[in-house]
Image (cartoon, rainbow, N blue to C red; front, side):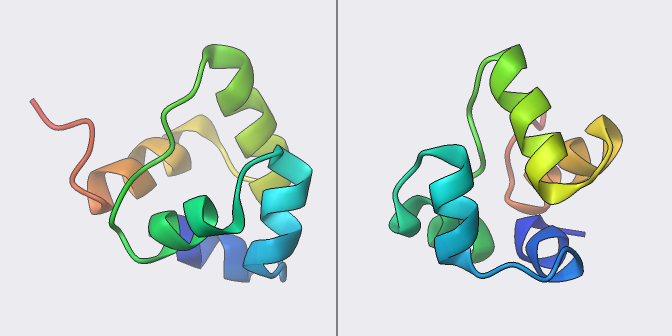
Length: 71
């Protein structure tokens, strides 16, 4: 599961996610296209989990899909 899958699951457009998170639409689209992954503080991840209605584990998996967070 990647960030786009999470976004589609909650039925939101990239523009809606961007507004809720206070980031550029291009940032959300980059997440969707696996170009980048969210890089945020712990509070930022808490906000991501709320907006995407997902668990921390699902966010970690989404980052791995984008090639981030690998050793």
